[in-house]
Amino acid sequence: MTQTPAVRLRGITKSFGSNLVVEPLDLEIGRNEFFSILGPSGCGKTTLMRMITGFETPSGGSVELDGKTVDRVPTRLRDLNMLFQSYALFPHLSVYENVAFELRVRKTGKAELDRRVREALALVRLEDFAGRKPTELSGGQRQRVALARAVVGRPAVVLLDEPLGALDQKLRKEMQFELKRLQREVGITFIYVTHDQEEALTMSDRIAVMSKGRVLQVASPTEIYDAPNSRFVAGFIGSCNLIEAVVSTENGGRVVTVPGLGPVPARPADEVTTGSPVVVAVRPERMSLSDRPSEGAFAGSVAERVFLGDEWTYHVRVGAGTELTVRVPSGTMSAALATVPDGGQVWVSWPADAGRVLPA
Ligand code: ATP
Image (cartoon, rainbow, N blue to C red; front, side):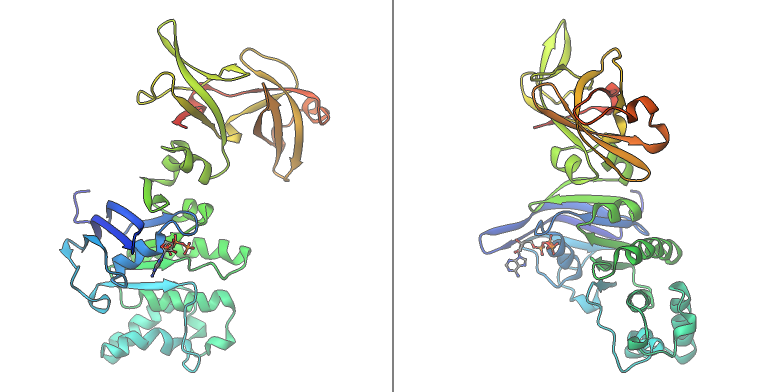
């Protein structure tokens, strides 16, 4: 990153009493970046976010915004704004006045205020709702008012903590696209906290995956998905077959063997040591299923199959009790495979580059 990052964390850490909830961590978040902090409940996401805002005092390390240390700067003087799931709008004020509130507090001139409020309302496509009260809006519209309010002052950074949590599934999907579009248009750095991996994959430029107070991987959505660096990341993002195996050396080459199944296609990374237990991570859509044998395919039996419209999900038992999940797009389902009953024999294969070897 050649530009000064919008946010830089140096050795930031937080303990509550003897409970270390964020391990010391360095992180840079770029300008105009849509950056997600993703992890299961209780992993420390909110605490990390609150340290950036200044609501929480770090136990160690420091926070820089736009190249300046803000450790002694109170939240209200930091160039950032926040959006939460429980966005409280003022019920007695119109949509317009809700959005204008912060600018009025800052004594922004009348013409400038009007221009900015209308621009913010246009960004969230609520120009025609300026005169309404929050009670006269749907949940999604209220959320958009809160969003307009968060960006109207054009802070350098907006932090969003599970802002879509209260919305139903369909509205969440719509809002994900809206948020991403809006972030691109306004060019503000968004730091988005979520436990929803699909949400993070859809919207982010980069994602930090957290577990138990540690940031395990920081990368783009495609990299996180295709090249997870740990068992946790592979299992947390999307669905993934995690097959227990061991790495050994044979004829000078390294072989990944699954007990009860034999050698499997995978490329052991250099850092994986011979003899150590590993998992081979293979995405279900990278596996192929056939009703007949082929070179290198593993024979198995259909434990279950589920029709999901655009695809079939098969659970196939191979070797000594390894169960694999295989996705077969409906359009590629052969008539012969479709007639294999539960318990019937099938063959599973995958290319070596689909098998990522990770420390167990
Ligand atoms: P969620 O998705 O459920 O909000 P999270 O990943 O945001 O979870 P945090 O809210 O950061 O997690 O909490 C991390 C850990 O720190 C939890 O174990 C929590 O109980 C603990 N914790 C958070 N705030 C405090 C506090 N003020 N005092 C003591 N412990 C706290």
